[in-house]
Amino acid sequence: MFCAYFTNRWMIGGFCFLIVFGIACYFWDQHELAPYKQQAVENAEMLRQSERAQKSDTAREAEQAVFDAPAERATSTDKGGDHWHKESRPEAPMAQVPSELPATDGTHTLEVPVSPFGLGPYPEVPLDYPSDVLWNAPEVPAHFSNKTVKSIELIDRVLVKLWTEGNKDFRGGSTYNGKVYPHYHNTVYVRFGEYKLPDGTTKRYPVRIKSGPQVVYSREDLLNPPPHLRVLDLDSSGIAPYQFLDLP
Image (cartoon, rainbow, N blue to C red; front, side):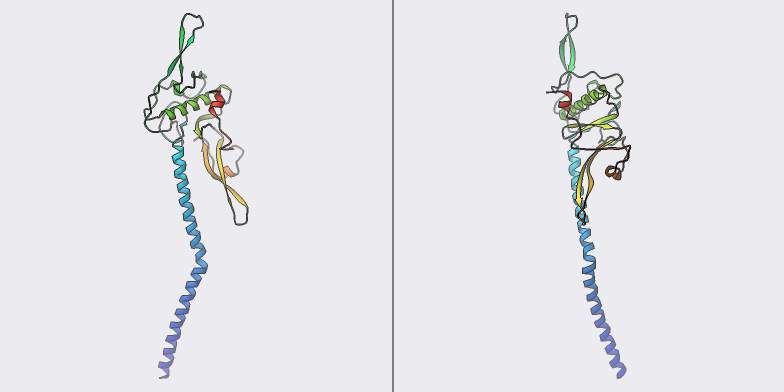
């Protein structure tokens, strides 16, 4: 009888212990693991926002003409190689419009090719210029829109002028927000963002990066550039083509 009594007490005690232990585990889980669960949710949300931002940047970049000459043309993004950026079907065929200029002897006129976009006669290309230019290309891919072709012409004009002035440390260029960015061999154009740390200090991080495919760097290099790398602000850099070329 006594054995049964003590056995029942041990069973009841063990059952109560399991209940108390389960309740304690539940509250421990809520108290200790909840912050980690919340952090995981926040990290997932940050990842979704980053993906949305990248998709938005990709869509915006698709509107920018990119040209990294020389020689062969390809349709690609601005990661390596020589290319024009692919766009939709052309709005209208492009043609070089001749302009008549008086000949030096006054007997007849000379036809000088001019831009179909109202940019005037094409500039003379230096013999040592390492790239093809739009107006000397045998043909323009049919899927390029007039907007893209005009952007490429402006890039070519800006780079040819830079080369003529002795500024030759670049290979190709691209456009962004109406500006032309020469792809210098040692330069990265960066737009930085900032976020606040728990201790109240702020930390920078790159939001948008633009450079030529020949520039090698890491994310850490952008925040603390080594001597061989030049990091320029994306928004305050770049060349306004109409002003630089003195175009109307």
